[in-house]
Image (cartoon, rainbow over all chains, first blue to last red; front, side, top):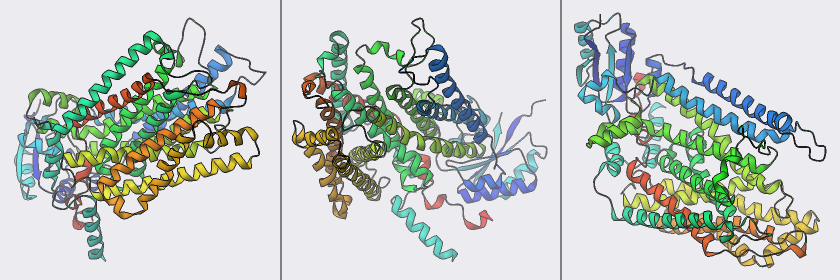
Length: 177
Length: 461
């Protein structure tokens, strides 16, 4: 059965009140909640326990793949596929491989950083219910939002709305699905 | 203790941007440049000049394709001429953008927040202009893909031991990573434009480009990690790119090129000319769009200080290379420098010393650093000086190397100048399109500079 709403959203005017509200909701036991702000707020990571993400690992993996690809590409071409004997110098001339290996490391790591960012954020996302709240357009300007989602086990429409109102938001609105 | 620190913090943020801004006014002021129907005359004029010169570029490229590289002044022994000079000049200019966006981010220099966006755009477009020259210089530019290793029927592969092939990888990686970094930085601001635009078409376009960004705390958390990682990757990259560019020279045995200090010397020169370009763009832009509150005199002064510092490094390099030429006892090296100073390119050499070393000493004076008009003039001096530097390094060394019998001179033709001015047109064209269509200052990063963006003490716990 699909729930009729995506959740309830409270609007705040300052980053401080959003961080306080997020922390209060988290302490109350809500887990399916998200905060929206026009700029990154470090304290929100604390409040919502968002400390770890897998991006550094993805970038490390990308970098290693890039380094191996870069080196192997040059090894394959200069030693095996298209060997050129110049005055008997060694075909496996590793010092001259350093630059391209380095550049490929950076290229693959940067590409995996961006693709990893998109993947971990689930972007591009053409539709999301929070945009159904008309005032949510201000989340990219000067307002701060806290949304408790209906999929949370503790979610109860009236009780949650009461709880949000007690946090003294500017407005509490329902997020339609 | 707590009170004292708060006072200091407040003063700092006032220095970076003017007081009295709110999240709303910052957003409105920066996005208004893009979302308005009104286009200032200044924009029209610059864009017009850009388009005009771009047409000149297309004309000279068309002629180059039909007639060949002989339309340029490159003749043996000076086969690099303007093309490589302009390549090195443009790519150097690009470096300041990455320095501002990556290195100053890692160093936690908050003042970068209001200049990083257009500096990164400058990087991207400067690299685009730079990339054209080696390709056009190939002689048959349409075969440029031969530079990359790919399975082919000719059985021939690039020579990975050549610095020219390293350059292909370095510059293409640099262009890709700069574009990615720039786009990632734009995402939250594209969301702002999507939410604020009144025009339905614009809203769809910005919406598609923003990819559904909604400012979620979960996203911001990953986003901050991604920015730091990209900055960490771009920092060694930017240093490596100009190092590899300098390898094009140092790996060769031409006197005047074959020296170990070229990499740091080139990187410093790149940042020097790049900051000059940042100032040359920022000073008119902030005046036209009334952004003095966001790009303050403090920003200009900081950029001028970076310019002075890198200029001193460059000056030191000139002294050192001349000293080394003498001290090495190598007659060819010594002769190369003597020819530089007294030979057919002595006018260029002494003007570059004047533009790059002597005149910038004026930046020691606070009066010059804090006056936008003088600073603008000074940055143009540096741009000219840095172009002359590359010209002298390339042309004077190639013109007079080991054998007197093979000496020659380089004379630029009108098509050399047309191609060079044409890329300036391409740059202006792209840059002013960017100014009109995308926010030139990072909106979300400037929001974090406001004192009210700080979460108050009791909420931190």
